[in-house]
Amino acid sequence: MDGQPRFDGEYVLGYVRWHQDEAFQEAAVARGLPGFCIVLELGGRNLAQAVLAEDISGDLGLIRPILQQLAACLDHIHGKEFVHCDFKMKNAIRKDSNGHWMAIDFDAATPFGEPLGAKASTAICPPEMVEMRDGKPTLLALQSVATEEDPDAGAGKAEGSVVAKVDVLTAHPSFDSWSFGTVMYGLVVLVLQPH
Image (tube, rainbow, N blue to C red; front, top):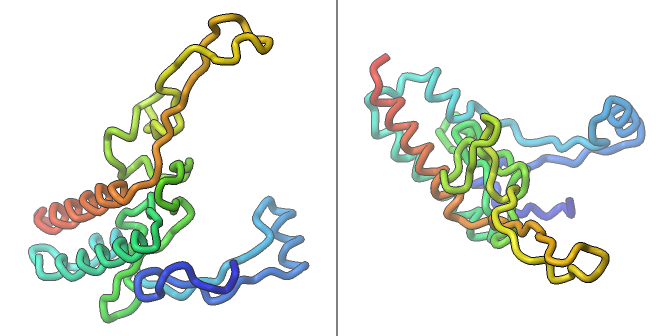
């Protein structure tokens, strides 16, 4: 952390300080934890909690400003050429009582065009990016999807041996667009369902 925030605090919950001292580091590492602590601003409820705990049923007027703010958050993140890769109701929080919504949880965030990492959400991503394997969703980015003749067959390998080629999925804003659509659908469906 170089002290310069990557994203604007209007859209993304910011960190207050980076805490790392020798005693803390020793205690954390001894417990198998990272030897640092990031202190974040205090946030309120996440969107999933707000939908379940607050009476917003039938009030589509409440949904529109929430979605507009969250769309602005994703637009800001994409403007910095990053893809959130884990956008869902639990990763949107209301920062204050004025209803200001922000994005959180950037451990899966990936620069445009870079390979999607293992932390990219398989729960809310385009269906063509996921394959069910042993009953669990698995990103295709982590799967071998094609094979071809090994061009180095003469280098100690059997002639004509085949090597797996991985078609790696790369970060693109469409990943977050799909996730945003599922959040929008969830808000409307949850709101319109009778209690």
